[in-house]
Image 1: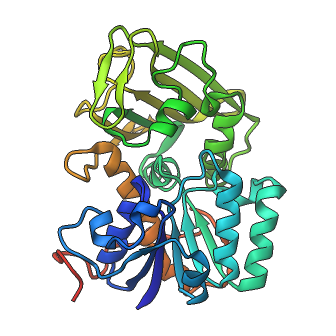
Image 2 (image 1 turned 135 degrees about the vertical axis):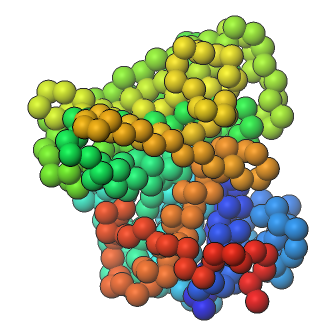
Length: 361
């Protein structure tokens, strides 16, 4: 069994605990938390499971890493604390662990990552002998391996579009939704996630990955942005009220330009309520979906819906992204230490999982 730590118990961390517990090759040995109120609580309770896992949450990072776990799922957010996330991840790498994480956007395509992100990771790997695979919660597979897989089903490919379409009224991450993305803020508020070049920092790596896999040269990467206000005040179960006149929907594209045309596009359409921007693309179930559209011959459209934690499609997207990361651990353990991306890491079938429910025996 591969001893595995889950670091963080938010939207991503809860799904990570469940994924590690379900994986036949992994053993959950520790859970790291920041909130003092979570210290000592059972991992099963924190993950929303109906049973205990007999692993108590700890905030003692030094002790957990000193036990030399073979793998770490770093599930703490890097949205508003990228420097802290980088420091945590390099710390885990120096302990010799294989680390999987969505927290470091610039490392989704590590070949094009800024030196200030890449160099500390390379140094930590050289020192400790660990490995890192970074992939997104948007989810990464929806913006790299899935569109590439589907592109191989046609005879010609004219353009590739990847879409995340979500209503975030059931999401439970107010700092990201309100402050980073700007939902519920005045329309003159300038959300950090939407600052010029930031979408490219987050999703440009996946554009470059697809271009590299398709064997095309990018002229450049461009961004487009549109925002809409709420017509009426809406109330959410997890994050409270969002007032009329404040930002209620965002639509942006990160475009890979090939031959002067946007041929590789990642588009995000996010709302805090379905009533906002009804003319924009909507998911089939009204809550959330990921979609890949291959324009060519034939035209191919694939829509993926996932629900987790009840019918929460936002949580389902997190869970599938986490599945991609966690299911890569046993493959990474058998590889040489290093930095890996989505083109390096194969999709992993659910070996040993089919028909198995509940606790591992």
